[in-house]
Amino acid sequence: MREATRFFSETGFAGNTRELSRRLGITQPLLYRYFSSKQALLERVYREVLLGRWDPTWETLLEDRSRPLRARLIEFYRRYTALTFRPEWIRLYMYAGLAGTGFNRRYIDLLEKLLLRRICIELRAELGLPDERRKPVSPAEMELVWDLHGGIFYYYVRKYIYRSRVHEDVGGLIEHAVDSLLLGAPRVVGRLVGDRGKGAKK
Image (cartoon, rainbow, N blue to C red; front, side, top):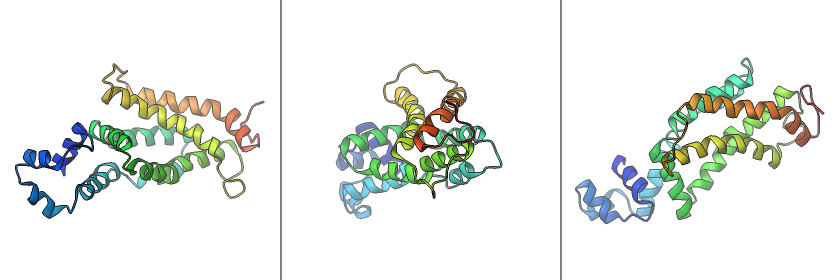
């Protein structure tokens, strides 16, 4: 699996199993004794690499209201990026999207359901706005949180895909991104929810 991960992160999902077998030093028929098809192998790579680094404690961290939301978000993104946004992960994720495998859609669904929606809910709680039982999280609220998540993700795309020069202080980058969200949240989230709450400004 380690070699398959390296192989597909270099060649994309169009890479053929004959070449992978040569790199492994085995025959192609032997490879198919373990995986019934190339798609089965790719599914295993998806589970091991894209899903295998998922940490359920992220959800608990985001919901811990004994701590300020800023501290929770900063710690979450430091932990999340350390485990997920590594070179092979980023490259496989991008190749999966280009290949139309459906892996990205499945991962995004999980990300939105378990993490980004939680951030929306915690933003409301921070601002004294109605909870999700009274008013469901709107697509516009999700897009606001996607701005935060996507900005951090794109830093790693620039670093590992485009090989651009990037500022190496990742901790500082995360703090700035979180602060930008929280400073604008009282005005923007209150307007999106339709309730000014305790921290909203005119």
